[in-house]
Image (tube, rainbow, N blue to C red):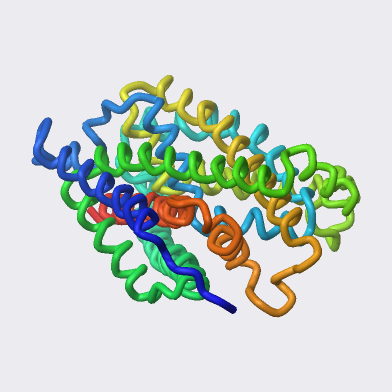
Length: 359
């Protein structure tokens, strides 16, 4: 496989995105209370509004694995995965009206305090140890997956990617606390959304427009209808995506420390509830854009599938951006910045949540 390398404009776009992430951390390290209290460092003084919290929650849960995985899934199996969006309508009101009021009214800092109050300190410690082990493994995957894809397609050494990600994360998370993490997440959310929309627009125009992409998708059967087959052996049915996805999302948004910490730092319980509802359109937007990117990539490669003998599925989107959209200055740099932003937001939130539960 021929490797494509960054141009000067790509490096500029990429470095500017990383620089702003560090700059936000420095800003909150030298303003306000300067992170002198535990409450400010870990909980942002519990004075955050629903807007930044909602965007932070959105990118905390969405990692680079999602950015790379959804288009690859649609490319291979069609839009049936889009049905996962039904679960968003189910879990959102449950988290907003069942989980958030309980945790917020208790005025806790760590979600595992609930286990001690409800059961015992032993149960709390068991839950905490499991969470720490899970997050350590999860952070390894979140770091390694995009770094491996970037290395395979661009030649950038994976250790440079991993060390660079960790260094930037540690810098702004340590300097600015939860305020820096949340506001950096806001910036990174904009980078992720803008980069994906740019890929959709540029990629669709390259194959003849949005109409042409839809025409090709319909002819090839990639626009899959909703599958109501009750068989558990069928992949991506309404029941597995909607019901199974609802329980998955409730575990992530309802009891995961990274998510609950966002709700607990809001200035009021109503703000916390609004933040989860404001997250709903963001989730659907990124799901729709991710699926359409998969259709755009399929329209480009329908007669020359690179998955047969060139690359692996998790490298598909990056391969497409580097080889097909690489002629547009700055687009590859913006997309790699998108991957790094998705990883940075997840890792920084994990760092902060692990510090919180440990304290």
